[in-house]
Length: 263
Length: 235
Image 1 (cartoon, each protein chain N blue to C red):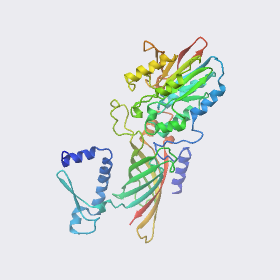
Image 2: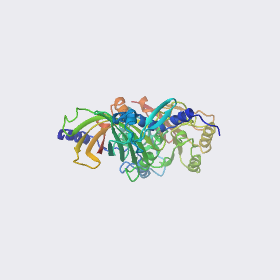
Image 3: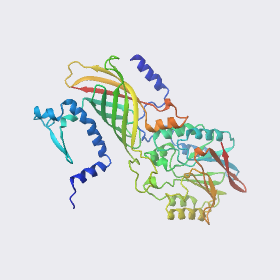
Image 4: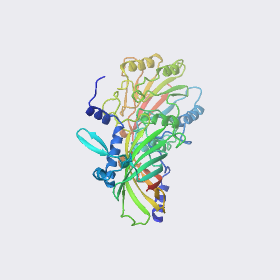
């Protein structure tokens, strides 16, 4: 009995979260809470009033491709001068508690501030609530070096077919003309199946109306860059971790560019 | 209103999510009935109490004699953690000297377990004694698996209609293998409890095992969690 108990205790000592109540648990404590809000605070302090060139690391759809995800993190850490890193959503496969914790464990090794968007998979089970506790609200904005970054939750099916919050999007884009650049980041690109034709048209119309410079997305698991609509900005989609690529958005005085790096 | 045939009502009942758990529970309980005497014996020794009275149940053309006393568990269990809630209660049934099963209900909430969303879990646990009885004295190593049925937000057995086919895999039902041991103490002359057992079990989830196989990142030591429990052996 003694040996058995000792073995059990020794074995359990290796695990840091030995008691697990449910895969559907939604609830984190400090230091795992409000990670986006904390990163935004750091970035607000770092940001300058006037425009100055900077680079942003971009990746997404890490799901449970943990080995590739770790290598992406290591590759980002080789860069010294990244302002921040944007994760384009789908940080989990089933939105369960452990997957959020695994994401946090790997991404905490990043030496740059990280902003994480919500993806459709992260809405499964109680992922929506877990995301909110771990990162903060799913819609948020950042002004960095006089450039506007809009992070938008455009998940539709997993919210029981709910249109994206275009009113919020419009409210943050309105009067944003004085920023040097305007970037919108949302997990699902508007041409993807969850968007109805009406929503797709409306999204691009807003991009055009407010002169958004680039619309960035994930979801498709493959890298694309182009101008799919007659009017409106160029669109970028990041690939999944499995493709073993990372991306940079270089924001310069005379324009911006997306750079892809293979790992 | 059109009248439904009995057959159709039964089919709809089976199709309705949830009812299968009752059915499965019923199937698990059936062998215990046989161990206790079964319906044929019951006709010889008539017990007029409500629980022991044979009750005919007709499933299409088959008649099954059912007694509520079959549902009387041999064990009551209380468990802390173990993927089926912060705390859970279970009814245990000993089918053979080696095999026992338990039906648990567990809850996780803001107060109990610190989850902002409430989770109700129904679980059917099958466990097997690993060694011959009394080989290790009062310690009984055992292993098995649970079928955990989680009820909370955005879980489904069948995808809602607005999704394309096979867009997601079902996320309501999980298989949870476990291993552990119980330390049992017989109680002298208990009125209705003949013994008490303390158990500890390490369990994991199908999804964690899958990531352990698929990735180098998730290792064997990452996938386990501990559950502690008390078993009351009823007289």
